[in-house]
Image 1 (cartoon, one colour):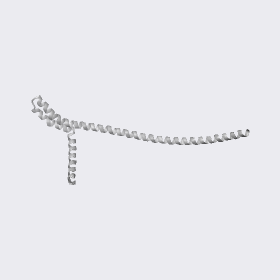
Image 2 (cartoon, helix red, strand yellow; image 1 turned 180 degrees about the horizontal axis):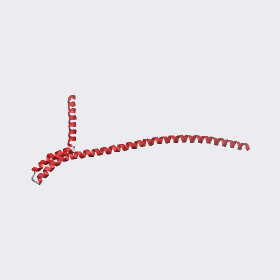
Image 3 (tube, one colour; image 1 turned 90 degrees about the horizontal axis):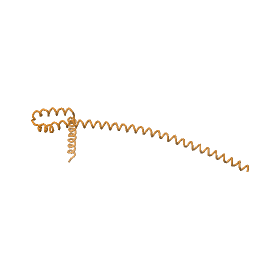
Image 4 (cartoon, helix red, strand yellow; image 1 turned 45 degrees about the vertical axis):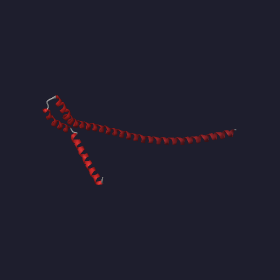
Amino acid sequence: MTNANVSAFAKFDAANKRFGAWITKVVGTMYCAYFFALMVLPGYFDLHTFKDYAQYTSTSFLQLILLSIIMVGQQVLNEASENRMNEAVKSIMEQFKMNQEEIAELRTMHQIQNDLIIEIHTMHTDILGKVTDIHSSVQIQQDGKS
């Protein structure tokens, strides 16, 4: 296939998809179900036996009308599913934001703890130095008395 053939095929395929989407939108409405019902109803007056009614109902009436009704139902279910998904995403994003805030708060607390540990360590070192000085002067005094 040449590029021109591929391009023509791609255009034809795109046109088919647009036409299919349009037909789906038109047939998937309750208006279309009502239209099909009005088209099929006059045929009931020409029927004479129960078998004729059953066959006509199953082949013409139900297939045409239920097709549109089922498509409408699918649309409603898809919209409900999409709404649930959007709510779930919204909830997840809110939880993510709260988690980010908690992480920032924990980091702040961690930094405060680190600062306090350094301060305590410094104080401990100072106290230890003073205790050592006191111990040394007591030792010197004891050595001087002996």
